[in-house]
Length: 390
Image (cartoon, rainbow, N blue to C red; front, top):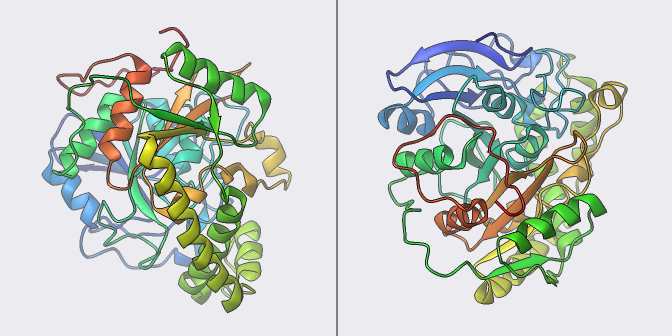
């Protein structure tokens, strides 16, 4: 199949399994340079060993077919990249693909691979998954080994999968993490708490309809400190990304948007970081308290519809598209984005958040919403939207 524009930066053929995987180009593959979509890294030497997630993927019998494009230095939400090109959004071509794991999301949406491996520091798996109409899981912080992933240090970043099919995503998680088990019998529906958050009315309506059609209570509950957690997550990603990327700030090779963000990030103060850490503790405790009485929390993945690609290429930025996902990077809870039926050619997604360590429980709740049972083998058909009444 011909690749949609700029989805892959390198075609590969590693492993012999039937299920194809693309790997975000901020993750090391031995023998390949890790350029993170950045011209300043154009001449970096090839990696000498696989990242831990690549080793596990190959050991589990998957076949890696390419390195996927991304928003430069994994520091943006639009997926635009002036150096490597911007991946087309296969299902919503007028819209941005979302960032930063844009190529990983676009590849699975286009059917180029069954699994895309991405990274999520402030929504960078779930936002492109939502923009491209596929599934994306941010695991519990620390669940999947980050060795060999840029940046080397992060208190927010998680490696995780994207797929056009929920069972394929679940099978991948079980294959690379032996502690992950989503096969437990369903029994009663999960006790779910729908969160009261600010979002476009059309998105709210689609989420509520999905929950009600599955027989789940759509009455909303409050989660304190969501806005403060978003701001704290921004402060921490700014400080940590600046420290990781400052060697390239004066290179003259950074894209304009990333250079502006890095220069602004350099102004993050120690006091802001201390305040962010205090918010992290308080918000994490608030999420944990709500999850004492609810197995899973539900809310929209995106607060509003994605920018058009033309608007983004014209200079518009929208970091607030991560307003409902970034807080759970701060707290470290697992979060899964599920595509719902589109609204007038615009993507809509539901986000499920679970207890720390209960990534499998989040996936079981998603299965309940889909009305499916665990598949005996991974499927690769994709195009499975959660439909009210299904």
